Image 1 (spheres, rainbow over the protein chains, first blue to last red):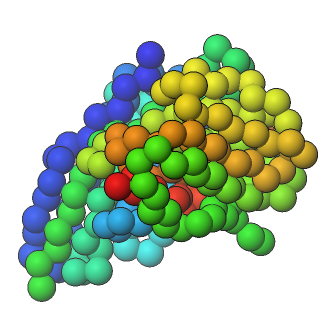
Image 2 (image 1 turned 180 degrees about the horizontal axis):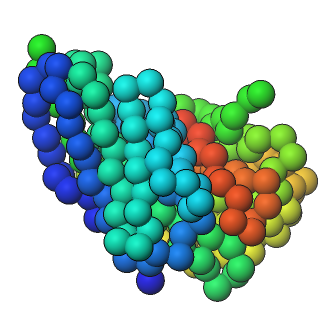
Length: 115
Length: 114
């Protein structure tokens, strides 16, 4: 059974710092992993999708890595800005009895970047 | 191209009322999923459609919740006799097929039951 854990639950950093958000998953037989951003009261915005054959993906100041063997993914944010303040969620797929997959989400890391 | 869209973006209703939430998946995607996100939690799976049929509804919390996808495209999540505990963000996702394709998420509908 897939379980996803995110550490830390909350993080507060001064503007300009580089930071790392952690995601761990228990079932390494995943075909991809997604990182999302969620602003307060809003829906999900997909940030990065890493396929199982990839070790990392980059988009601007964001870099996500995937290590299936250890059951870990990290989201690296370079030169953080106040606009990066949001909750960051990771999600890993888990097979269902109906032959499809459902995403299992972590509870997120709530990031606050101080100006 | 257009992503997954959901309407309304926000819905406020009174306890006991009936609500419908709509999801428009990406064109051509055969698989459609509904998730629910309660405050402070990550989204949790509710139901999955392959085409017009609900292939897996194991995540629906009780029989007040029902979803349809009559033509294999747009889906509607229906909640009867709403309760305050139903307040959450309801998210829809679609994928090209159900066999391990990436699920693309919509922006969600925030439901508030007063």
